[in-house]
Length: 257
Image (tube, rainbow, N blue to C red; front, top):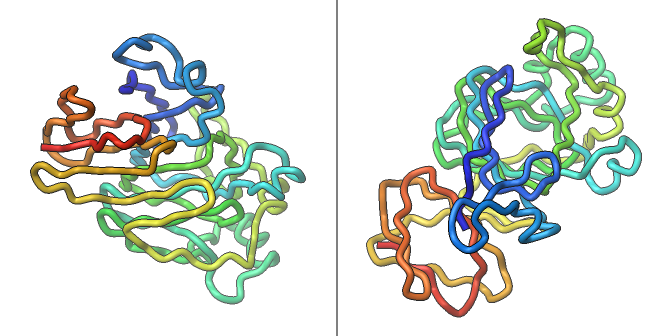
């Protein structure tokens, strides 16, 4: 299945919700027998949300709840990964010795760059951001994001920025502090990763490459390179850079040429 564009314009840039069954903004199928229907109707309970984030300006310093803290702070749990497409700074995880007192001071004076670890992310670096890890995406970074199907973000600090209405954007300091996990390790960049919610793999496809996955899986593909032909069960589809699609895994391999 391919999907209609689903662009969210925000004060810092834009998010393209590539594949979503979230009630707030479900993807609409663009072709095939289900064309025009919502993914939420065709695959109810689809557990993931895939985005492309284009940060013209840095995002807020934020945290998401996990399964445990969502019961206390409210909202939906969110673990996510970000795969860098256009490099730049990513702030994720606390420096050694940072505790609640240092975070509260940073909320008051904006000193988060002094307590967060700055990663000079390179293209295709991938970071795992579990619920409870404080993070911020820096200016000019573009990335591909996979997450649990959730729209819950709690902001600790927003760089004194105002929204489209000219007023300071809402902060969620109390809820954020209920969600922060000081025991989480600082993430390190990887190419591939697996957690309890999803598995992420980067493939460098040569001509006439095949992908075979276990039957029963749902696969999300984000095409990063130039135009190619996808072949599955004898059907050909042209795909290009930035193209995202969803398919079910089976004994029938997917071929790229």
